[in-house]
Length: 245
Ligand SMILES: Cc1cc2nc3c(=O)[nH]c(=O)nc-3n(C[C@H](O)[C@H](O)[C@H](O)COP(=O)(O)O)c2cc1C
Image 1 (cartoon, protein in one colour):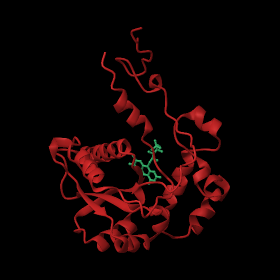
Image 2 (tube, protein in one colour; image 1 turned 180 degrees about the horizontal axis):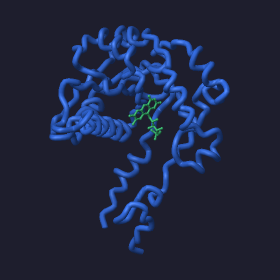
Image 3 (cartoon, helix red, strand yellow; image 1 turned 45 degrees about the horizontal axis):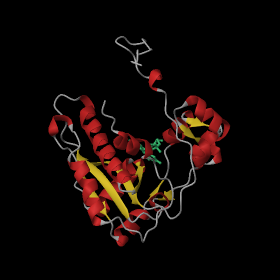
């Protein structure tokens, strides 16, 4: 049997780098080209290749984007709460979701969530960009869709393939990545599109900051479900795939 250890290792090592990056440590052009080559070869529904990618490395433009202020949505705070674990033990048991320690105290207490929603302060995107010397912003044409794909679900899956291809390539090159969904939120998207001269009909799928962490990131717990908990053998609900010994 062929075991693609290298590919699996890169997949397992890929992670979200929610840490400050060194603004002066630039991603080498050759590495960037390989990341884009990985994007180029991503599978897309009907091979529509439904993406354009903006590379932002100009300090003045990064600064302008960094000055955009965004307020977290009430929906985000409420629904985020449902994904939280409050201790490493709980997360280890659940195997899905995230640890609460990254979020403000008021977002973690159901009694305080409504107040937090009302009082959430706008924060500059600079805090999210967090020193990164490079942003990749993936956009798509909102006037098109994959054939007969309601809501362009197939188009969005395709954009996810682009994300993963680039992330894995970056990981293999030792470049850290952090996806920032905030860029596709209505107000932020509008401002970013204005600054970058993006045509009206193009929408932001996601942004990713890339670079090198300033210091070695602290260990953080990453969990995944066991295969048996999401695989159904022949019929839904049939667990226990009979693995050959
Ligand atoms: C479509 C998508 C959007 C995401 N948006 C964000 C985001 O806005 N901020 C963030 O910190 N992580 C974001 N992530 C990263 C996930 O939270 C992360 O992949 C997940 O918690 C697993 O952690 P890992 O990437 O370290 O394995 C996003 C991931 C995906 C696939």
